[in-house]
Image 1: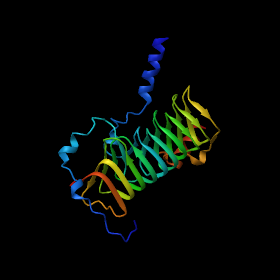
Image 2 (image 1 turned 180 degrees about the vertical axis):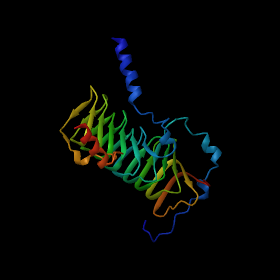
Image 3 (image 1 turned 90 degrees about the horizontal axis):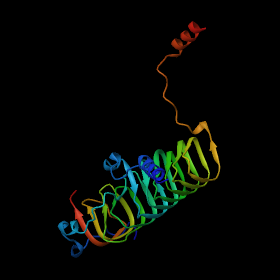
Length: 156
Length: 107
């Protein structure tokens, strides 16, 4: 029983982003809302954002990645390209690409996204609406159409 | 305060040598960083070091002995109150009221 608990903790350590040693944070490509920070109002950003503190209001964070850490508490609607939740969120989540809920996540709200990943143990209350229209465009294949048509003909 | 008001000067009596400030810093690996593309409007309370590079409109209150650092790229409007406030030289502080131990830096 104890070994299982230890295994769960180590699993969490693998998945939880290490903010302090994150190279993007050191290079200032990522903003950090620290664990003691409380903010009430409107927040928008055009860079990756890690929330370990408390945010209440609105978060407009399009085209970038947003992470709510294990200590993070958010009461706001969230818009971002990818959204990773390890903490608590009350509000709707709009993920242009993917929304990930870790097993420590506690989400009350609706999720709108192209893809969703939900770990076993994640707490979720709301609805999920998946739509391909929000999915980021995939890279074009390197095979020209004419060439691929020949391949189909030869196979047929 | 309106846009017509003069830029507030940092009182010299509040300036302390940077060496004094180092002694009060905590060896924490993490502080809050509001990056250059971040825009925030509202009220903020923080109990750790905070670096502001982006735009903030509202009140910032530092709880405890930590430092609020305002980088040159920051655009502030409102009030900043903290034990220690470091401001890069050349930062536009129009429409901003600073209070606490204020230090201008050359960075």
